[in-house]
Image (cartoon, rainbow, N blue to C red):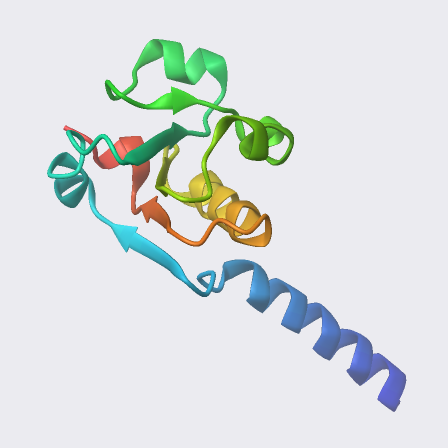
Length: 120
């Protein structure tokens, strides 16, 4: 293999690796820790699952903004001054949502590890 092939492979691996790295500045909590925060009126609770998933089962106090709509709605519907806690079904989409929020300038972003699949 020549150097160009090595470079292409290295860049591909870097891209894949970065996709799965936790976003810098995003906090991570368990659903047990989430339960202690649910009564805090200074926190914004966002569920990024589809409307159908949300309708089927959700946590009281969470607002549904599907992941595909988050970038367009976040700055209109959320305050950058307050903490945002994000949940999905497994933690993958909420991880992506956390990255989007950080890129939009939200400073206090928390992802719920394991998502709704660990909620009881």
